[in-house]
Image 1 (cartoon, rainbow, N blue to C red):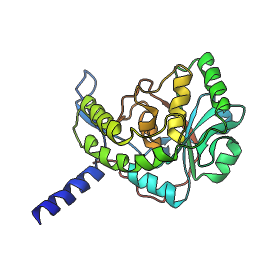
Image 2: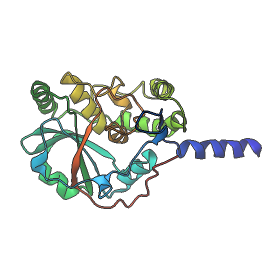
Image 3: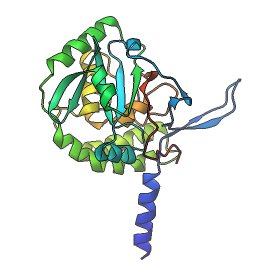
Image 4: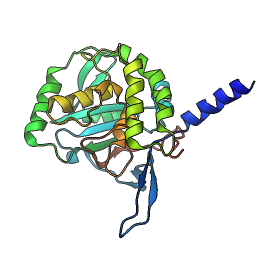
Length: 257
């Protein structure tokens, strides 16, 4: 049974992995190991905001109280399971099972348990306008069901790349390697939620990462915020804006290896 025990231990280790980053000492701070953080919440470094705070191009991450949502949160060790983009005028654009659609912010707040907003501080008005135009043009585009199915084992297997103390460039290359093998058959003309958000930014001329949008999950977007540890290199780190709605999560989220 040694092989079986070793396999089980390897799986357990991979499932508890999270990205880390070593920061050398400076004149003001000692050296430290920064760990990927999923704890952002009102009262814990966060704040509640209203929808009037939103600006065109903002990214919303959310969670709902469904088994599918909880499964995604458990698999990614994050409190979010869905990603949306805000083109402006009180509506969001999102990719869901029936395809790309528009929905009011009020409807999102009524149905989700938690909604948190992030912003690309370098997004220009012209880029925000292109993002809006492209997002609206995609309404009705079909959902990338194959991509979601293929991403399930990918989310688990990539944990090997996120073992503690793996250097950022090595981690990034490792994830890309798994993605090329496991997600190669996924469509890039249909969208699941986070893929749609990444593609909207790319079409606006403001790519958030040079990683393929099909490789990125809502949890990846959460960790692309300033001060956190992204698994895939973030070309344009996001700034936390605030929580539009917050309900304490019903799923235990692992914040450290």
